[in-house]
View 1 (spheres, helix red, strand yellow):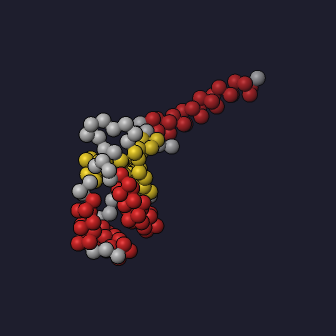
View 2 (view 1 turned 90 degrees about the vertical axis):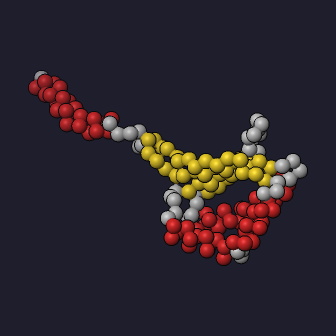
Length: 150
C-alpha cells in the first residue's frame, strides 16, 4: 500500500522537474537553416539543345566536379522543365553549397578555377559570349534550405 501511494507523488515530482525542459523546447523555432541552393533558369534557342548539352557535359561539368572536390560546393544537378509555359526556362542549373565565400576566398577560388580549367578571364568571357547567342539566363534564385530541428 505504501508503494502505491508513493507512485503518484513520484510521477508528479518527475513531471514538474521536466516541465522547464519541455517548455524551453516548445518555444524554439522548429526549423534551422542549412545549405544554400542557387537555381539558374536557362532558355535555349531551337536547334541548339545538343550544342548546349555538350557544353554542360564538358566544360560546365568539369568545373562543377572540380568545385565539389575542392569542397566549395556540396553538389549540382540539371533539371529539365518538361512542360514550360511561355517565358519559362527550358533547364534549371542547380548548385548547392554550405556557405558563402568572403572576398578573399572568392579570389582564391577564381584563381584556382582558372588554373585548373587552363583559361583566362578573356577566354572564359569569349566562350560565354558565344553561348549567349543561343543560351539565355532568364531567371536566377538564391534559396536557403530549411530542415526540421531535431
